[in-house]
Amino acid sequence: MKEMGPAKKILGMEITRDRRRVEIFVSQGGYLRKVVAKFGMSESKAVQTPLAVHFKLFAIALSTTKAEFIATRKCVKESLWLKGLIGELGIVQNEVKFFCDNQSAIHLIKNQMFHESTKHIDVKLHFIRDVIAEGFVVVEKVHKD
Image 1 (tube, rainbow, N blue to C red):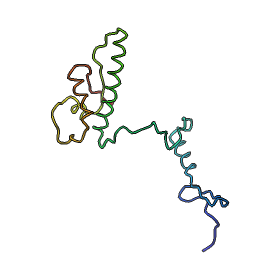
Image 2 (image 1 turned 135 degrees about the vertical axis):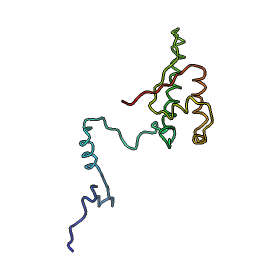
Image 3 (image 1 turned 120 degrees about the horizontal axis):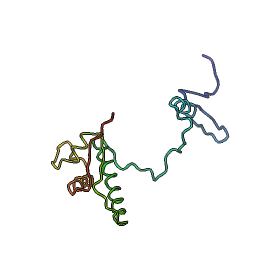
Image 4 (image 1 turned 60 degrees about the horizontal axis):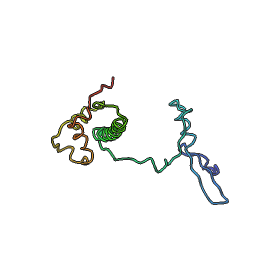
């Protein structure tokens, strides 16, 4: 076996040593640049990681149905605020239409019945059903094609 000196790269990670401070830095910069170039995103705007504190995950969705349900709730909440603002300006706004590509989420939103498989969904998400029952919002299926 032969001595090859200190490692500079291992498993695609670049290793930099600062012997004065007794520190070792590991970087995946080269690998990340290759991946970004591979997917044609070299000219994209960079964002520092970890992201700023204001980028918070609202909830952890364990299924696409719950994720769509959460997204629809946020949209309904914002649209009701905008509808109120427009109403204060004297403009009459009819129902707001939302389009969703997840059939399960649409059935869950429209159906008032209790489902055993969805009992884990927070009560605060169910206000969408009340808004739909009052006729403020209509949720329709949009096809992915």
